[in-house]
Image (cartoon, rainbow, N blue to C red; front, side):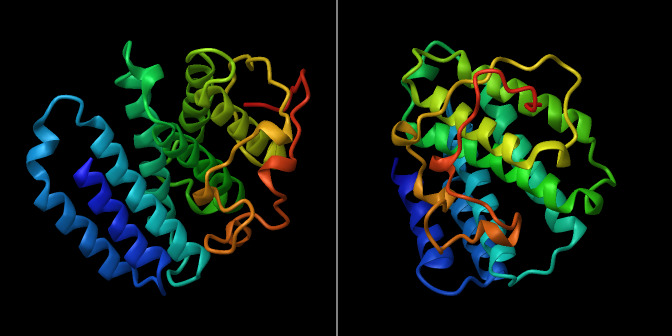
Length: 231
């Protein structure tokens, strides 16, 4: 917990509380990982690793939104890799205690999925080299299916699954999808959809419009009961 708080303080100092300078932020994240390296050998260290990948992804997203970093293929590919790592790690390390995880873990997973969807929609032509979109589409299907399998319908996993579905529905055919059959989409009730602040649905700190223009608030989206437009 102390290590995670230290990481989030770095994110606050370098990405929220002032202008972002990406090389300095990256150096701070690398130093944090060096300082807490011993924890990465401990049982259930996957959540610390997930937090680290999330921190990197959030910094990259912020630099892209603020246009402090050029939209290079290497940057986009790295963001997709981090998104994929977070989702795959969540699936691979699931156990009986998964449903008892804090909401923030599910927020990180959904953020990774939403980021990947938006990057593929906006910059798909830039990241074709070395990136199998079919594999990403399959992973997106798996993460939604996995989230929907956790706990009762009121569980945060189901809510974050709905956020991912709403994002995919909004982006539609701009994203390459899996050939697998789609799971039934759930009806989204705007008043019950709690979206964490770092999704920037209603704030200016993280400008998702830099990636996908004309993006409405997530809580205003509605996924019909039979949505054939899901991956």
